[in-house]
Amino acid sequence: METCPICKLTDDQVVFLKIGPLNQLVTINCPRCKQFNVTDLFLVTAPEKPETIISAWIRNLNEQGVEGSQITTDTIKDLKEKLSNYNPREKQIILLQNIERKTEYPGQRVMLDFRYDFPLAWASTDEEFLYYINYLQNRGFLDSHMSAPVFYVTITPDGWDYLEQHDRRIEERTQAFVAMSFSEDLKPIWEGPIYNAIKKAGYKPYRVDAEPHSDRIDFKIIAEIKNSRFLIADVTEHKLGVYFEAGYALGLGLPVIWCVRKDDLDKVHFDTRQYNHIVWETESDLENQLYNFICAIIGKGKEVP
Image 1 (cartoon, rainbow, N blue to C red):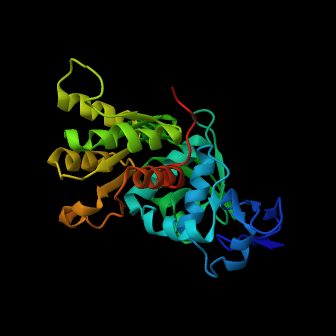
Image 2 (tube, one colour):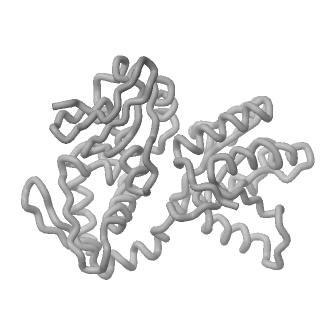
Image 3 (tube, rainbow, N blue to C red):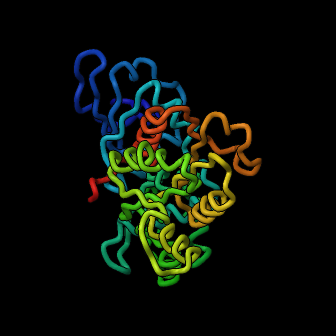
């Protein structure tokens, strides 16, 4: 039996598909994390303890149809710093959304294995996972029947209504909303590195002043944030609208990528300072960091026109 280098599961279903020369990729199939890639050097230097957040990130990308996540000794440190640490309310929403992805028709029973499936809720253990299952059942969103080590769950009508309220198909969106100062000094940053990084990552960049519209500006902003896969908030020059738009996106449960020019870093608002920021000095620096961050945290999208 092999041992997964991320979640540390030792199981006969853990399979190392490809092993090449030094610094070549190794493709791993794990029943808990699903498919991901590592370098053979990473296998030598992999952490001794389970990396539950990394495991959950890999599993959830797989659930959304994004395969081939690549883990190296450098990227795992960056991911641990930047990946969201979801609260219990957010985890139960994510779990219900993942159950929905596995449901082909209303009323279908979905089989889950608590040994392998707890990353579906970004849970650290099977005990935490079972807590969210029971929580969703107590709220009337799930019916469940356990037959250890598996149990069967069905989304109830109230569960479907709840999913509708939370716009469950976020992963199908291709738009990236950009919140930033509209000053002429920063216009080249929008037209160059931010726009390029988003396009190269496979998403459609959108800034509310970039196209004509007849709607009230506040209605348009809210509508387009709701229509987006994630939001990029560059707080350089510290415009209040940027903080509002980022806060609204966070309230919807959308990922927010924070950026700031290095000479403005000390002025970042106290309430958002705890978030990890991409700190940039040059256009090429911003473009490279932003592209890598989008691919690592959101996942590389399909090319859009």
